[in-house]
Structures are given as C-alpha cells and as structure tokens.
Length: 306
Image (cartoon, rainbow, N blue to C red):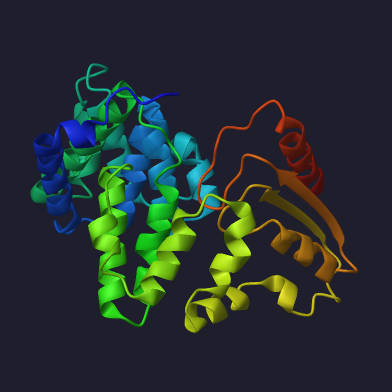
C-alpha cells in the first residue's frame, strides 16, 4: 500500500493543533492506560491499521496483558475489564458510531456513574481525537509498522548516561513519529558517540550489520541486552516445549539469537520458525512465500493448548 499524501508534512499547522489536543489530554487527569485502551478500541471499529499498530505497542509497553488486548473486541462478554473501563468503552463506541442511536441515555448514565462531568468531556475529546487520527491515517493510506522502532527508541533513550544524548534521541523519535521521512540530520549531529551508536542500531535495515552495531553500543546498554539473552543462562533443566518465531531479516535482533536459545535448551523440545517478513519492532504483512512457516508456528502453538 502506497501512502497518498504525507499529511504531517503538508498540513503541519493542522497537525500541530491535533498534537495540542493530545498534549492537553495527556495532562487532563484521565488514566493513560484507559486512554490507550479507548484509542485501540476505536481504531478496531474504524479499521485503522496504523493506529492499531501504534496503540497495541503503546499498551504492551505500558504493561497491558495480551489477554485483554485480544478480547477487547468482545469486552462485554469478557470478565477482564473494570466497571470504569466498561463505561468508557461503551461511551467511546457510542460516540464513534454516533448515527447508531445518537449516544443513548443508558450509555450516558453508565458513563456518569464512573466519570465526573469534566472527565466525561475529556473522555469525549479523546474519542474525537482518535477518530480524527483514524480518518487521517485511513484516508491518506499511512503505512503501519513504521511506528515501532521509534517507540522503542523513545522508551529506551533514558537509559543513556548522557542527558543530552537521551533528550536528543527522544526529539528524533518524536520527529519521526510526526513525519517518518523527517530530516533528523541536525539533531543527529548533536549526539555524542553513545547516542550515535544507539541511533545507528535503531535506523539499521541490514540484518548482517546487527552484531557489529550492538558491539558499538555503550557498555551499560550491552550489559542490559546480555541480561535479556536467555541463551546465556543454564537452560539444561528445562523440559517444556519452546515455540520460537523469529524474523530472518530482523534488523535489530539477529535470528541467530533464537538459534542460540534453541541450542541452549538442550533437553527441551524446541520448534524454531524463521519467517522472512517479521522484524523486532516492525511487522510487514505475511506473504505467500512465508505463510507456511507462520501457519506451522500457529499450529504448533494450538497443539500445546489442546
């Protein structure tokens, strides 16, 4: 799918106003987890691929469970949501589908039982905002998947010791959020060696360069990466069934890491599936060429649930 118009570039004034609303909402007192949940649900209703990709990553980064994400489309039948969340979800759906009942009284009463008048106004503005982003992204065919690596950078820039590097990397991430093709050269020029090493890894598209780029990272960051590498731990006593799915062209974590993990779990049953079009924080559509590998991984997982 080819993007029709880069609306963040062409309509900078309008987009700046939209971001102003988002800034207000982020400080209005409503729980950020609730706002992300609403954004995800409204994006489901509208079928916005870009926003679903974005807010699923935001929710996971904030600690949201896979179970609640998968069942959100059927939240009325699921017991995993609070009464406040249920009232907010019902309100968000009614406002989004406003021609279907014009936001019924019973939905309003349910919302008022959980939210003050000011909170309900802010909640409504949040629904208005995500509906606006959905319509912009759908109308101009914004490509999903480009958000992931910049969300990853924004979440982890603070791990660097140099405050200038951390703040500059966050500024670069925000610039790329607003415009995937933004020129961040002037910002990148302000980075020190550690910041440049991190940016090089995040921007990398060559799987063969990953090991070299990781070796150039600051020692503290490398130690944290090593701490997450299960292959460095004693897994000889594990006897479960490991189902590993890794992108053969992953530009951030080479698939050799999953191969090493499979080898380390020597006494366990391991099923390793290498799929061409999966990246670490970006996901491209599964193609006919790799559909069999993905299907085999799904079958293996379902077999374990029987």
